[in-house]
Length: 296
Image (cartoon, rainbow, N blue to C red; front, side, top):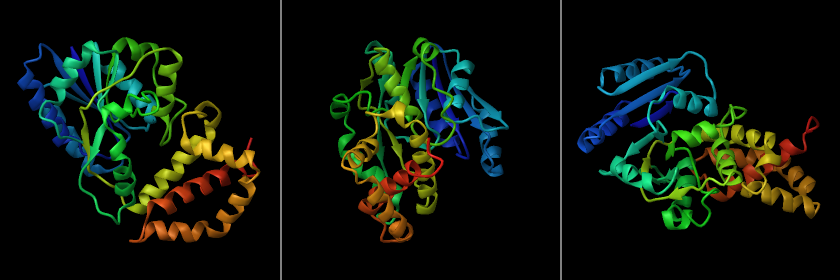
């Protein structure tokens, strides 16, 4: 049996589930299911729309009133699922390949963890999230991802065996945005479980406003600081921060950021937003967290 699992928070999943249902029916799979788990959404219209998923044959909608967190909601979905193979898809993704499910079914023979990747569609050059995602697109082919299989993994689109998820569940200390997938990739490497990368992308085509993306980025950086010791070697930003520390430049950079940080943020929120300013902002914000008086 194949279980398709979609965690959602304030995302309308109706079109995504419809597209997956059509492909599942076309494959004539012996048994399949789609489970959508709402992790405490607050948007009433989205909640009402997603409740209609119950009317789609083969789909089950489960709503949690309280937010469990990014790792826990995925473990919850595993507990709800009946399949021996599980496909995780983020709720804000779009099916763009006509043989998406077929490719994953055929890939079950390749390994216990298979990552399909994602592509970027739509967006404008004044949107920071679009620029950020588009920049990395050239490095997202399966051939390149297989060069660093554990460091080029995301939870947005992958297939995994039930056994692996039972043996290595997501670490539920990761409640807030960011790095639960990076840490899980590290755990797979530590325990010798291979990741196979294939070209079976979904499309990322929903981009939040710059202000919302900055808030999300700052939340992710706080997560990174909290788990920095466990994520060393798996974060390019930590590598830069360590290099600055070795050269005794960390306090100087943090001091400059305290002076320039607000100006950088205004630039990122404007129509002149750019990735160089974004990278500097991320580094400065993170160093500020490390040098805060309550840092342990």
